[in-house]
Image 1 (cartoon, rainbow, N blue to C red):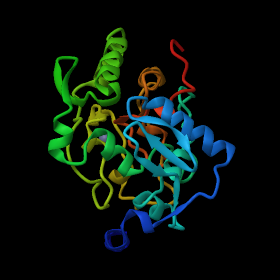
Image 2 (cartoon, helix red, strand yellow):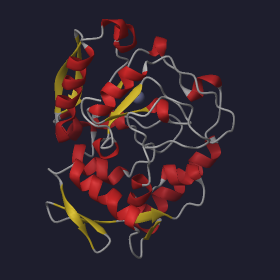
Image 3 (cartoon, rainbow, N blue to C red):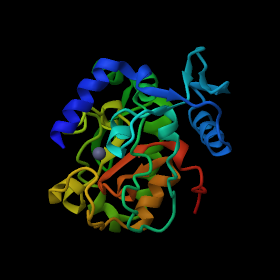
Image 4 (tube, helix red, strand yellow):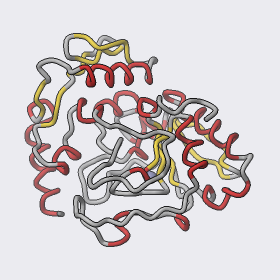
Length: 263
Ligand SMILES: [Zn+2]
């Protein structure tokens, strides 16, 4: 696993993003709908979809591409924008064990996140504001309304003192770092993720499993109502991943549209 990641990293660095990706000839209806959901979720940055490209308000055209990688770990390490859009995230659905390699939302096209939230530690920091998380000050990006959305989550959750032990202490929000053992930048780098109480959490690597290995057990203590409260505000949950990370939520409003407010 370590060796494969090293090679993926070397290869990615040598080829760069563009040549590692293959452009979509034309979008399927599902791809087109997913691209439109992305535009709708980030209106401050995105203007529309045109000629196989995502069009930004500043005029940037980001081609809707697919990864050239043939394996799931390969796609994770070097995805195209369309690979990110493939995610069928079951917002507000019952909490159940995901199918093998079903990790909706875990594939992320990093250039998109870097352009919105900041491409360096200092650039991201410039957009961080403090969110009061049950007395604990957390630094969260204000970009795309993420901090406001987390404040709204906290307000909703305040009505449920029985869930407080899952929520606090938070294990952290912003940290400019890669995912351990991979070339991928964690969403915590962009100030758009929160880890809840590790003492109540399960994480796939804690049991010694390797990426893509079969048999990772799904263990969860987090109440469905707590998870749905986040999802209603645009935050997805790592407990819906085969590679489970039940303390982890990240702001991905393009994936939570099916979760009707007030449900
Ligand atoms: Zn996390």
